[in-house]
Image (cartoon, rainbow, N blue to C red; front, side):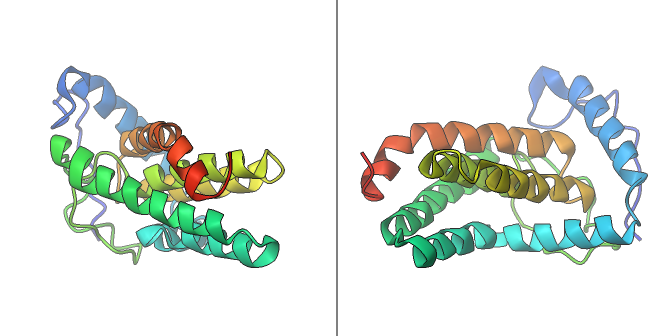
Length: 196
């Protein structure tokens, strides 16, 4: 098993500057708490499934497609796909290259059969895409389905820390990144979606 624990609370977190010790303490505390729920069959199943569905933003592309089929929102679905592609490019080829942070485990946690990405850990791409998609879909649905999108985003983002592919701070950083990008790209996406 790759469940090794390290005391990182006093060392710098690569790529995160002077926040290192504080971030490391936060990550260690969250990981210690998560360890108390790991091994629960329901938690493990939900985290593994959510993590897999977050790969390549599959769950968000599917959500856009379902909305298109159910309510004639094809332009919104296409706009969401384009937005997610832009978000992924910015995060994976831009932001992550600035930080180059190591993941919590060398080869992933053997308890969870999830894909181990080749990019650096910070910020979490799953959490960023989830926040980006949720903010966009909440805006487009005018709040009617907000709880659904928010719940899915939280589960997908949190799953990455549960399965130990990301530190908790990677997930928080990803969520902030996704929200920021959703706001920056709101107008162009609204135009693509045929919304004014």
